[in-house]
Image 1 (spheres, rainbow, N blue to C red):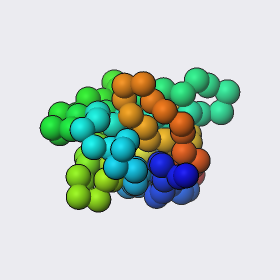
Image 2 (image 1 turned 90 degrees about the horizontal axis):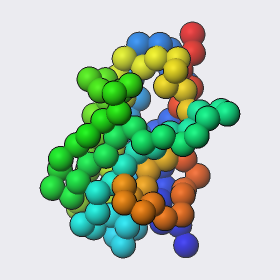
Image 3 (image 1 turned 180 degrees about the vertical axis):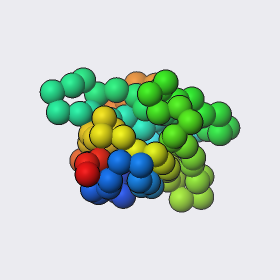
Image 4 (image 1 turned 60 degrees about the vertical axis):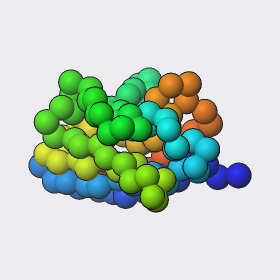
Length: 114
């Protein structure tokens, strides 16, 4: 049973933008703080941004001012708008609950390269 489906990744030049989407099952999304995570090759998975059910957002210092997280309750969807992308943003991006993440989806690959 697929519970998290990420999409929107791709290849973009430094300075470019991408918008990621994550459709979650209602059991995961409703009432939960959701997060976007990323994992670069050879590195641990890290939290990039989170958003509470009430819309309060928090960001890792590395993306603050460049990324914006949002959510659409009607669509059970979490978004990550990524602007001013840098080479070091290259990673597979995942979404999941912020507190006690469950099974992970396939993620979406973001590659920033000239």
